[in-house]
Image 1 (tube, rainbow, N blue to C red):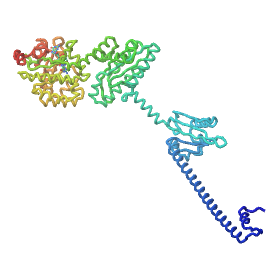
Image 2 (image 1 turned 120 degrees about the vertical axis):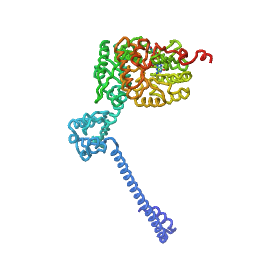
Image 3 (image 1 turned 60 degrees about the horizontal axis):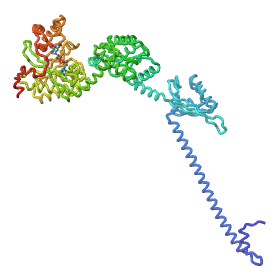
Image 4 (image 1 turned 135 degrees about the vertical axis):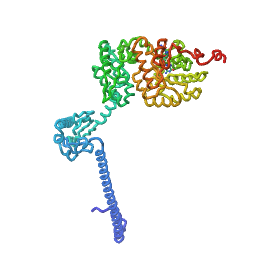
Length: 625
Ligand SMILES: Nc1nc2c(ncn2[C@@H]2O[C@H](COP(=O)(O)O[C@H]3[C@@H](O)[C@H](n4cnc5c(=O)[nH]c(N)nc54)O[C@@H]3COP(=O)(O)O)[C@@H](O)[C@H]2O)c(=O)[nH]1
């Protein structure tokens, strides 16, 4: 018989020498042992209960965590802006689709879930999808499509997508699900294409721009170097386009520019035409084209642009000048070719516009010379190389009434550079504002010192009207020098009014209000002088010297002079005849009641010292005062 070790020990302890067991004491000990054992069991039971409760709670928490994680993942999948789907790998039936998927496919998921591609999509799309599914299931490899174009997307629009599809197997390794994502990148690709287009095209005409032209030229140079071919670069400039903007305003100017660009493209025989800014274009001609073909194309372009442009109800005439440089004769790199095509264009414009000029080496010299002159002109003011000459103006009986001030440049090495040469340069680089102000200050200071209060006339360039504060500067100079405004006349050409007409007109009105006289110079040489006479009350009209020069030679000149005089008389505007060199010219003008004259007959432009007598200064007084 087996006995619990504790009971055996207690019986041993309670057995005396005679072998008798103290049963009472044993009963007490056994009872105590049972009680202790009951307590232990109860403690164990409680511990087990607690453990079970803890386990249950842990399990519950784990289940809740799992649920939350699932909800979290579901909400990510639902809200991700990329279409996500899952299909049964055996029959391609859709079993999951998120919101972006609904948008992508263009149908609610209730209509899609449980259906196969054949039941959902047009035949060609369904075939394509099935084919992909089959491949993924058969090979087990994921399918990746980047920038894939769907000719007609599943929801009826052409789309571009990035998509991935992969196979999920069950625990036995059998195909279970096909899981896929589809990102619709149509918008992004369209935007990228639009940005790239904008970067390479001119916004107004949609022609390639300067940067696209540079790239095309670099590419062409590379090809031509490799293949030893030649090609031509044409530099084009629309003549008188500024007038179109000035007369009709910019919106119509823009339409005209588009129309002109279309004409260039349609006449260019597929050559690369780019608009590189303002009214400038460049053309890259095909390889190995013969010189005479380049010329004939350029002439066709000039002719096409020269035809009347009609946009809405507006008609205008612009022209085209073209400069041509040919690779490799006129340059083997882009910079030289472009510079030489520009030199040829400059010559074409100088020769009267509407022309075509091929580059010649001597033009390069001319251009470099111009640049040098422009550089020297910047220093001319600082180095006191500019001076003012005065040419007398008189009544027809010879009485001197004033002078025209004419600027001169005494260049340190070239000698006297004619204003016809350097004034346009100064207008180009904006120096004319500074030079004009300097001339005005010199002239006013000089005239203010004359004993006789004679008139003095100063030429103002159109650029001075556009830039800076001309009114303030004239006002300031008059105050500074003390010359009465009524003694100052400003001579302007119609170029002043062709720019910003309203601004120029307002400025002229304010100058006139100061007491300054305003003369219209070179009358008859422009083509809208007459309309300008209507807009502003000029104090004088100066008939251009070309008409006076030809007075005796061509009867037409005499008729023009008569007509101008009679028009001016009708408008009560006095006329000054420019360039009067002979007594016969003077007599004719006097006979036609011309009021004033200027020209070599009265006196050539010269330093004021030459005319001291006329302005009332005794030579001795000026020299020794
Ligand atoms: N904006 C400014 N323009 C100016 C200034 N100074 C001159 N100019 C303009 O330069 C052009 C050429 O001027 P210039 O060489 O001085 O010629 C003037 C006269 O010398 C010339 N002239 C005068 N009389 C005769 C003549 O009998 N025969 C003949 N062959 N030439 C003659 O005419 C020019 C004056 O022209 P205009 O100004 O139109 O009255 C010229 O356009 C100047 O305007 C300046 O400071 N600022």
